[in-house]
Amino acid sequence: MPEINVPRLEFTSMEEQPRLITLKGITKAYDGVTVLDHINLYIRKKEFVTLLGPSGCGKTTTLRIIGGFENPDEGSVIFDGQDITGVPPYKRRVNTVFQKYALFPHLNVADNIAFGLKLKKTPRDEIRQKVDRMLDLVNMSGYGKRSVESLSGGQQQRIAIARSLVNEPEVLLLDEPLGALDLKLRKEMQLELKSMQQRLGITFLYVTHDQEEALTMSDTIVVMQGGRILQIGTPKGIYDEPKNAFVANFIGESNIIPGTMIRDELVEFCGTKFACVDEGFGENTPVDVVIRPEDIVLVGEDVGHLTGVVRSVLFKGVHYEMMIEAGGILWKVHSTAMEPEGSRVGLSVVPFNIHIMHKMEEGEKK
Amino acid sequence: MKALKRIYLGLILAFLYIPILVLIIQSFNAGESRAKWEGFSFVWYGKLFNDPNIMHSLWITLSIAVLAALFSTILGTLAAIGIHAMRKRPQSLMLTLNNIPMTMPDIVTGISLMLLFIFTRVERGYVTMLLAHITFDTPYVILSVMPKLKQMNKNTYEAALDLGATPMYALLHVILPEVMPGVITGAMLAFTLSLDDFTISYFTTSPLVQNLSTLIYSQARKGIKPTMNALSALMFVVLLVLLLLVNKRTDEEKS
Image 1 (cartoon, rainbow over the protein chains, first blue to last red):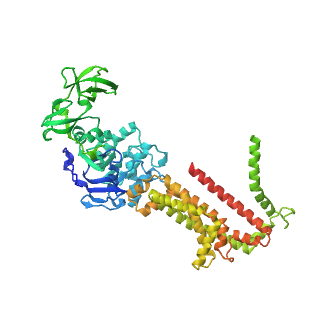
Image 2: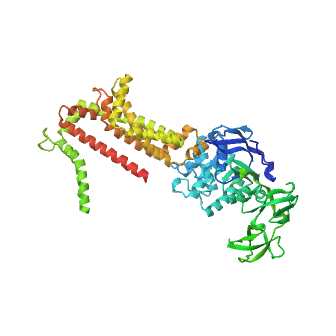
Image 3: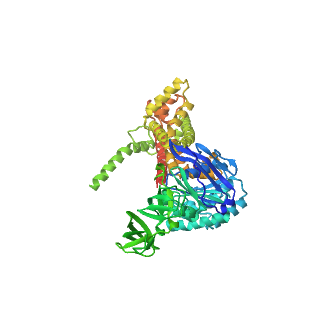
């Protein structure tokens, strides 16, 4: 099995930070089923990295290996220059926030937060101060004496976050921490977590299957599927330049059409030749063409690149979602202007918004 | 129809409890005859507590029940935690193996333990009876701790490790407090089972070391003395109270 090294697509200010965690060729199998296949990844100090992928892609296992709850079959975990593969969780300078909070029901809120500090034999006064500061940080001042079971899901998750952060970990691992909350609370907590991370300057490694969450919060997104990393990049980089059809589909909505790269900067699909900005695919190569629904512009019937018929219209709040049949393909189009069902329209796309991708290998398909 | 139901239920309860009621009434009978009521009296209770044989057996019964409950609770709790951590298949195998001794007739358990002690040339007496009691108590402890472990969030133990607790600290300060209600129920159950066991005790002890059940049995062969009525009545009351407590706890845990 060759090592897959996925280069980062964009450079950010994160580039100046030193690498804190490096995963080298991590492989893990359960009962003969490979869940992680030679994962290589590094995480910089103060970076907000999100592992994004469908369930079963290996993202949680990756997190658990960094937390020390699982040992890899092959490969190593490097933390701050030291190999920590096989080091038990209680000796690692990372803390984890679990999906279902995992608070200790027999302890009250303050004692839950103080759990790690007591183990470090922190003086009692200092514990009280730090616990109060943490309660303040997560907007739960005055809840110290409450029993954890009397709290709502969102409040419990805040306490779980406080219980981890009070130990001043260098890395906070978060395993779908907002998965059990309702949509509105989730959005609030996303912003809160992000601002907390920036204020405290702690490295966050966040696991989610929610692409919107990943786009909102991350400095870097790692898209995973079938135990492999498909793409690493900034949210914008991944959204604008998905590496293949799977990533394009998983991050936002897409029209993915089979096409042929005629030569550099010229692609043919739906029997029409289009100018594009991609190069280096060779000549007459079969490719996948990705066009985002919001990048298709509706124009007059005679002036578009393609002509089509509106098949259905859905009102989505900010925009309309129309399914338009053109060139033998049903296109998903987002537009603030509505064209009635059955009307004939022209479709136009600027070269910059046509993304060319290599055809996926068989194994990579969903 | 409704009245018929009530009568039926009343009959069942009567058949169950009238013999015990007769026994309790007889224990207050001043005379020695079982056919004639000679007035209310605590005389047999007084004799009971002044009989050195009975008091010795009481001591043996209680000490064995306490020790057996203690050891089986420690063993059973640790075993339950271990079984809980297993993967699915070995786990269900272990639970089946744990259930078999509970469904086995006491006489089979008793005789097999007796044969084991004879085979290994261990002289039967206090220690063998204690070992036997620990043996039959432990599966019940496992069974009462298991549901508490299943209810626990599967990440709780990992969260403790994550915050810097060693596995031992996590076991004592996180897992144990969580499953404590089940542990206490298990201990009370073990104590009760040990207290009223006759069959297994009979086969695993010597005639010199008798608990109350085996003592009553050996005395009954010579003709039942009224002190035995008093003793049986007391045992019934103690066991009834213990069982009610265990049942109440199990109900509370379920809700």
